[in-house]
Length: 371
Image (cartoon, rainbow, N blue to C red; front, side, top):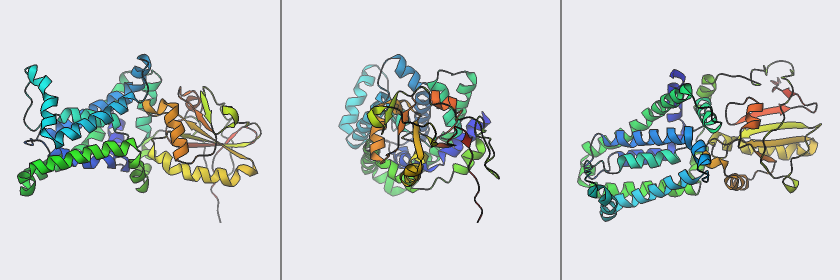
């Protein structure tokens, strides 16, 4: 649980959370009569829905035979509706009528705060560190146990703390800055625009540009936190060592960028296996480099296989992966590993991850080149 808490804190200060920070700041003090509990309700809703979706999303959607991205699209729609409600009080009144008929009275200023947090949690996609990878893989492969649940709760609490800071900051500004107190109507309208803006940006992947532009200053912390296992402990220093036989690709349901959608011929070739997930920002940072290697060395015998192993339920949708392959200009073969069979064969634990196999089918570590 300590590892989960620390992993959550690292995630909560990573550049991947930047898109939600303006929303938390603006909505933390944008109630009709802002109260001190509003930021806590927003972040509690975010932490709860993010935890449930991350741990159980893939499992539940598969059991109900629903599309993998239905929860994310529902969250985006709810964000738009709540944004409109913040901008136009009449819309908010219409949304609250069913609850009034049930005899439930909401606290002034807190209306919709928890629901807003729930919606944010469904679209909140932080960087995939080793702790988050352990949670998502356990949920997707039906290996949920008490330790995984405890890890998820600790991670959610850890990642919620930095986010709560921004929501509280917005609330304090609304309480103590006279301009905000005197212009609550305008503040709520602006907050509604920010919420809708986030939904639109997420829909069209505009936030990816911002996230990629900021260097991942938490990468070193995540690497120090993750316990290495499987193929990874092979020492990359010194001589060109043999890290063992390269595992076989397994459970691949679909191929992109190959002739007729068939697996590429890999026998006798040097192959770089690149594990990635299309919403993973660190993966997006790495793709231009991987693509450059492919363009430069493919004619000399190098083959690259992008093993797309999903992190979230919506990444199981092949059409979403195909769109990302096109949008990021990937030309090397991409394999869909939705059942984590190849991931488990390589005993992988995070995104992105690279494994270099020589022409005889053995994994080789990188070698430090000295001038």
